[in-house]
Image (cartoon, rainbow, N blue to C red; front, side, top):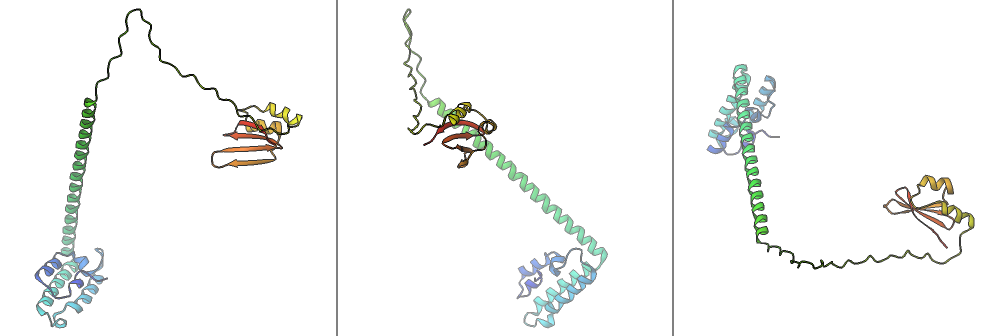
Length: 233
C-alpha cells in the first residue's frame, strides 16, 4: 500500500505539495503512530530512494520540495521532544475535530426535533380544522307529552340448526357408551383415561387442532380440549 507521499510522486503542483505538507507525518511514511525510530528510519530510506532529486531529473524542483518535506518529517519523528510536541498537536487536532463533529450532531438533533415539532403542530391544526368543518349533529326529535317513545325494531337472531351427521351404521353400544362420557371441554388426559390411546392421530395444519380416531369415533381436540365428537361411516 502506497503512502500519501508516494501517491504524490507524479508531476507536483503547488496544490499537491500543499496537501502533502498538511498530511499526517505517520501516514506520509506509512507507519503507525507508535512506530519505533528504526521503523521510521527504514520508511524514510525507502521513500528517499524514490523522491531524491538525483532520481527525478524530469522534475528536479518538485523532487527537491518533496525531499525537503521528507527530511522535515524524519527530523520531527526521530527527535523525542519534537515528536512528543507533534503527537500533542495531532491529539489536539483530533479533539477539535471530534468537538466539531459532536457540535454538528447536536445541531442536527435540534433541527430534527424542531422539524418533528413543526410537523406535529401542523398535523394537530389539520385535524382540528377538519373537525370544525364537519356539519353539526342534528338534535333528536322532540316528543309530545303523553306520547310513547318509538322503539327501533330489533332484529331477532336467526336460529342456527346443528349440522345433521351423515347417515351410516350406528356405533357399537360400548363405544357409544364411552362417547357419552366424553363431553365437549374434556381434557386429553380424561379422553386417554376413558378410551385409552387412539388408533390414529391426524394433525390439521398449524392451528393446533388434532383428531383422535377410535374406530369410527372421531374426537376433535383443540388446545388440549375436546371441541367436537362424531361417529364416521
